Amino acid sequence: MRDLRASDADRERVVAVLGEAVADGRLSMAEHSERTARAYAARTLGELTGLTEDLGPEEAQPILVDDRPVTVFFGRIRREGRWVVPVKLPVLALFGTVELDLREAVLQRRHIVVDPLVLGGRIRLLVPEGVRVHVTGRTILSTRDLRARPAQDGPTVEVGGTMIFGSVRARAPKRSLRTRVRDRLGRGRRA
Image (cartoon, rainbow, N blue to C red):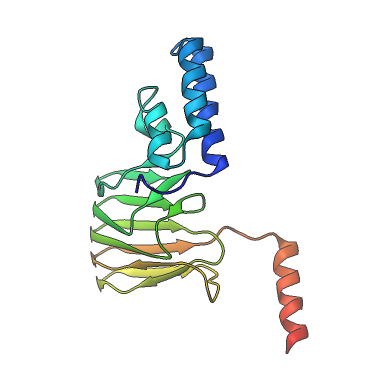
C-alpha cells in the first residue's frame, strides 16, 4: 500500500500539516524546510506518511495508510478522508457500527473486497458516484440497502463475509434537484 504513487493533492495535504506544525512550534523552521522539500520530492504515499507521523494522532494524519482490520465492539468507528483502501479489508463489528467513507479514498484496485464478520452490527458505506456495490456474503436475518448509482465501467466494492442480525447500507452522495431533473430529462430524450 505504501508503494502507491502520490498525487499533487496528497503532497499539498502533507505540506499543510507541516505548516500547522511549524506555526504551533512542533517543528523548527529548519525541520519544516527539510520536510517540505522531501514532501515535494516524494513519489509514493509511504514517503509522505513518514513526514507527518510524529506530528499528531493517526486519525489527524493527512493520508491514512492502514491495513489493519476495522474492529468495533458496542460502539462506532469511522474511516473517512484521504485513506488507502486495501484490496481486502477485514471488518469485525459486534453490536457496533462501521462507517467507511470511500468518496476521497484511494482504491488499490478496481475490485475491493470488504470482508466482514458482523453480529448485531451495521456496515455503512458512502461511495462516490459510479461505484458498484455487491453483497455476496452470507446474511442471516440481516438487511441490505444498496442505493449507489453504478457506472458500467466503475470500480466495484464487494461485501463478502458473514452478517448475522446485521445490516449493510451503501449510498452515493445526494444529487441536487437540478442534476436529478437533467438526468431524468436526458433519459426521456433517448427513449
